[in-house]
Image 1 (cartoon, helix red, strand yellow):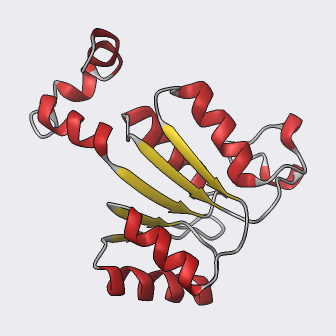
Image 2 (tube, rainbow, N blue to C red; image 1 turned 90 degrees about the vertical axis):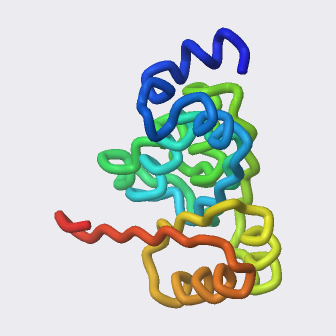
Length: 156
């Protein structure tokens, strides 16, 4: 790690469960985030801030005005833009060292499995069971850890 990285990540490096070795693992990690809405937006922001080295963002939806009160990776200027691309712009502004891959379409089964195999961990931030089941199936097949989150109304 260089001096700038040591300073940027110093607060989490001080944590005994992270330290230098843990931060280096984060910097080398690749995380696949599927869904960049109300849950995926803060997940992506925090992972970028923490220094996860490569984030792959998958979402085929577009930013809408009604999203902005809860989807913090998006802005008014990006209404109509793809959510993956919009989130990527925010993440690059937050931490320019993070490598970001945007996938702006719905993945078929083979494409999903291919992306899962590239990841150290998959974060499912989607909002429907069909997609969740497909992600779980791909993660089981690839033996890649899956973190699933959900939020609806005021519960999550």
